[in-house]
Amino acid sequence: MAPVKKILRFVLSIILLALLIYGIVLTAGRWDWIELWIILVTYLIVFSSWTLYLKLKNPELLHERATAFKKGKKWDRILISIYWVLILVFMFTAAFDAGRLQNFNIPVFIKILCYLGILGSYALAFWCGMSNKYMSSFVRIQKDRDHQVSQSGPYRFIRHPLYIGDILFYPLVSLFLGSLWALVPAALIMAVFVIRTYLEDTTLQKELEGYLEYSKKVKYRLLPYVW
Image (spheres, rainbow, N blue to C red):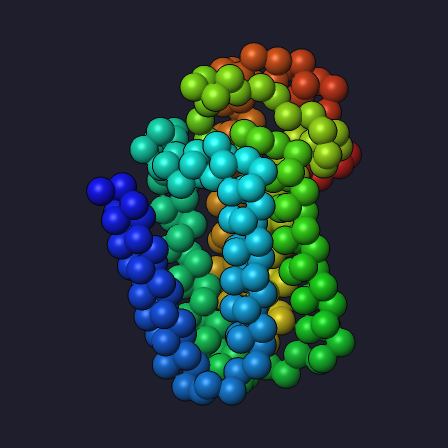
């Protein structure tokens, strides 16, 4: 029955994604919103590449990320739930503002810079995933996977490099799509990741062997010389 469940889950996810895209386009009131399609195609390429990479190189992490919800810390499940709600608010705000109202005319060169920044955020996420085989989708101490401190790649410089990309991603997408109003939910998403960084770092210092020593060696959580 497991293969059948996987197929059904995959089909359901495709249907939900199609409905979401249709809802965004309906809110935008237009199908010729080029920036939206660029973002969606880029996301699908990156997501498919990441999934394929994990399947070939680290299937254990792929399984972990797919099944971690019930195992994660309760506070993290709450934060991630808030995060997903804010993503929906973000997308539909951008769709109504930039798609239907078209209130702001963002210069093309700024959009190009933002798109390059978006690609940089994805590249940073890939680097983190290649360097940290314990990069679960929810905060938990993975004792069943012999959880150890990751100190290679970007983790040599910052303790939570993945969240730098997450924090920068949404304001960049907002400007690329042409919406300034979407910066409001983007700022709230950024706040969620700052809170998550603090709580995750505190958890790891208390519960993961070797992390406290690592935190003394790599002093900054997100911003060098700041925090």
